[in-house]
Image 1 (cartoon, rainbow, N blue to C red):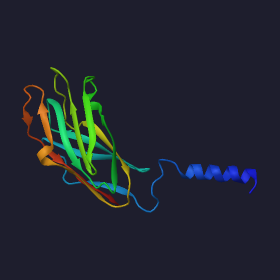
Image 2 (cartoon, rainbow, N blue to C red):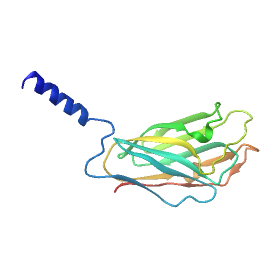
Image 3 (cartoon, rainbow, N blue to C red):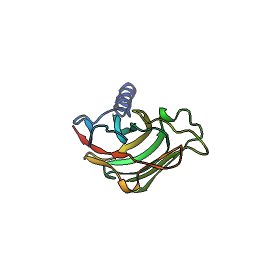
Image 4 (cartoon, helix red, strand yellow):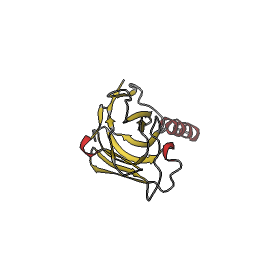
Length: 173
């Protein structure tokens, strides 16, 4: 091979390794377990390609949110937790603390909380957080909130708010 052929081959290989490439044979889809219902938090897929799966945590019919704590179970052979970040509902909350870690393979332990005496935020159809995963395998994965460890707290009096956490299934379409 001459020098030009090597450069051309290198360029083709570099372009072929782009982070936004999808697996050519299958498309990923996320199917929520239920449509948004009153007083709930659920997942909405926003990016399912290029080796990444990104979901928003979306509130429905929730007001006065001070803190959210949850555990999210997933298949560690398919997904690897990367990051949890705040979204627009918390834009006016510079003191917000975001804590997240993989408690064990396949379990995300997370919390978003305001600090000090602060007003609550609205969770009426707003994205509250973004959860990013690396796609590790080609199989399907459930994304299930652990009901006994998932809570929403009110700002006005610190009470536990009644809210349903709705997961779903990530699969090849």
